[in-house]
Length: 585
Image 1 (tube, rainbow, N blue to C red):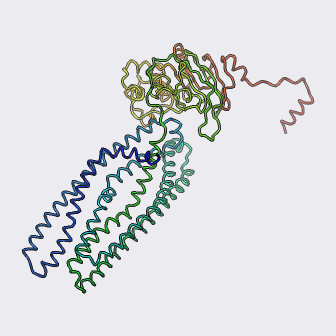
Image 2 (cartoon, one colour):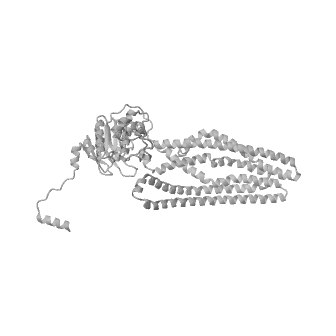
Image 3 (spheres, rainbow, N blue to C red):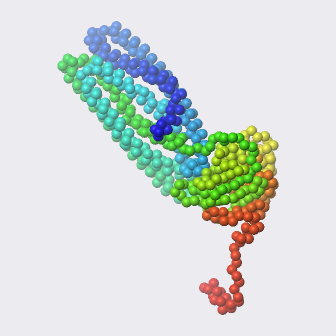
């Protein structure tokens, strides 16, 4: 069962290429048949032309070899272009499958591994492409034709055949042993390289912090250690590759020497001609060559096996629901959280513990609490970004697990605490999820987010380029763009995680007014410590250690959270003097 799943996606990718591979095999058959012409030509020249001074025969053989060489060139060029076409199809097919699969994975799965890991999967696509359409693939196609050359050796130089038959198992043994050694070496090299790439990704993502705090001195030792580990593993793997490659070269030379020696003895005993010995040496080179390349190219096969293993793990990962069983009308927006618990890993602690709450349609609910209290996790559970380990979330009485991500995103819009924008213009980012909306809708959501007045004052307006991740915009404007993007399509439920963190007091009050306006016909959940937003909310939730410890109207909950003053002690001059003496001390 496991083996079947391992090769299913690979068979699906290579199935359309079978016709190409069949044509490549036929071309390789003709190419290898033509390769027999050179040894036969040498045999005829040495055994017939030289001893009989047959210049006419030599002329005919030479012209024939010119035709063979030209035809061989054309066939090899055709085969190369066909393999390039196969490479293009493999690259497009596998890369597209990887991209779609990554987008279909749950958020918890994507957050479970660093970004460097997901980037490395596309390098695995290149490994698969090169293995199935590069020199390694051609080598595997040519390898079976070694039997053809062995058969010809048996016909024209039978005395040297035993030497060749003894050498071939040794080449296979070297190939098998190098596979085992290089498999482990490749894994260690990749692990070391992954650690280095992860550091580079973090450095680039946090470049502003690196510069602001001048962290170059602190990061340089980490870089040197990880880069040195990568180089060390690469050198170790290269040393092992060279060792087996050199052993193969030595074995090849020993085989040719042995064939020549045995052939010379056969010539002395008049069992073999000089031309046959020369031809058999050329054929032995054609036989040994692919085995020699096999040992030196074994790293490519090892890398291919490891890459397909990692891609198989990706394709076997559980996806989010892709299609909703039945299309429903736009929900009113009532949210019910029934005894929801959540943990990031099976053996990890519960981040959310038995959460129960009800968000009525057309209400503004705020959530506050200390860091690590579970506020952000709860805000990701409600729109289905995380799947509860226990309990469920209902939207208008329906379990959200039955809905596809596309439907949930159109009904429940979520703005995370860490704002992320894509390269392009302001308008591109606002309409990214709904590219067909008209300008009136763009302007509407921009006004609600407090973005419109800022944009119309710019020379390019909504066409202003925001740069990579929006770094050309101020932090507050980036947050407003993210809010505007969430409002497109008018989803009935809106969830915001610390939406006022980059806003000034005026912007915070304007956003609070927007929330109050939207709450008339939207369900809004805001994770915030903004007193203005909390005061305008209909309900306030307080979370601590993954539990909702208080819930109610803000005017009722906030006094309970105010620190209680210690009761005033009666006048005690002596005690007061002692306290003052202690403070002075």
